[in-house]
Amino acid sequence: MLMLVIAWIPADFGLAFFTGQLMSNAAREGARIGSAMPSFNASEVVNVTCQRLPSALLSDPGSGGTSCMPVSRARVSVTLDSSGGTCNQRVIVRVQGNYNFFFYELLRFFGASGNFDSETLTRETSMRWEHGC
Image (cartoon, rainbow, N blue to C red; front, top):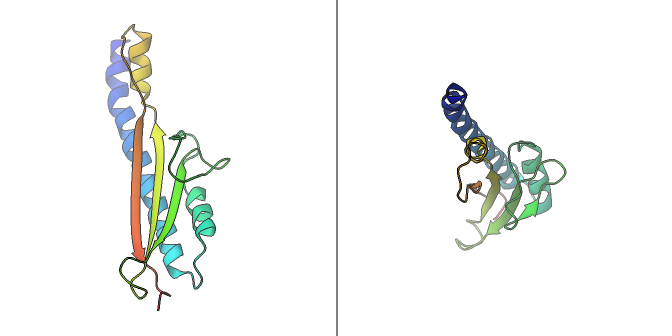
């Protein structure tokens, strides 16, 4: 059993890293599509981003954006930031989700006490909106 725990720790953290990379790619793809839209549509960017998120690896963080259910349990928020003026608007896509480490569940199984919460992963990408001027 000890060998199982030792082997699972790197696999679990590797899976968390992989999930973060998938979230980064989804945010980047959503920002890319949003920045190329002639007329900005935040709900379309949310839909595109949600389609690219893992369905089983993330759980709902509870707040912060639009839920991707039933595609994924993550949340996506999309904004068009115009603080740089009308010709320098940015599309900002933020993806949030909780990752539940299985290693913590193994610790509970072996009798460890403590508050082993999930880890909230957040990835954000911004790109200039091409049709701002």
